[in-house]
Image 1 (cartoon, rainbow, N blue to C red):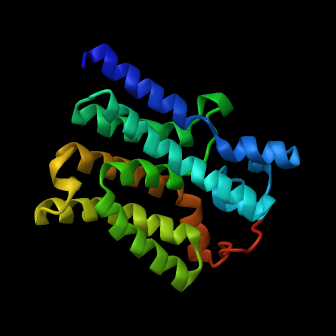
Image 2 (cartoon, helix red, strand yellow):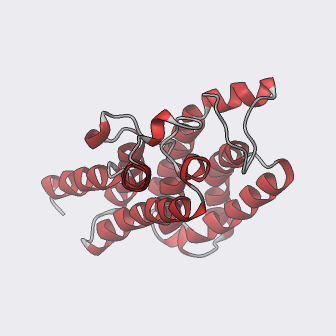
Image 3 (cartoon, rainbow, N blue to C red):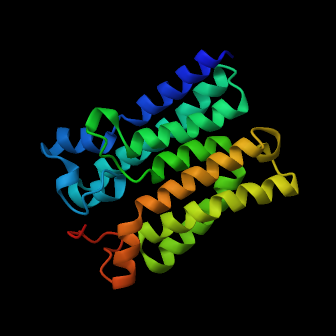
Length: 212
């Protein structure tokens, strides 16, 4: 693949990420901007608070799907590992900073899960177990997301060192780098959640939050 082709793949991944399904679906269902209700985040958890289970499920699936699609498309075009890993980062950046919606997007959790799951499925499976355990225990989606973002790069490294699955045969260092960059971005985007968790005012799963 030429340098121009690689840049086109990265640009396409960013534009795909910039399709903010939470904004589009809540606007279609309720005629309002999801960023003005609930926690103010353009993501599935806030859609659940703002519009209910059906729209939230649709947003979750579509956000995960665009992460998977960005990586799958890069591989289908025979992109080299740096471009495949870069496509994963680019689609998450598009979700967080969408060019179509004033660069005010979500926190990237579902899209990260899709992109990183496509890059390293076994590592994502291990991370998903940790995420579910944390959310079941504390009932904070934000805490589960933060922990998962931190755990995933270590899960990738574990799989690579142990010689388990696709994590060792595709991407190598580039997969690990993409995992670390995306994980760091997700944690940074949850800075306000961390402050609320420390203060004890973070909305729990199923609770209609009004704080930002």
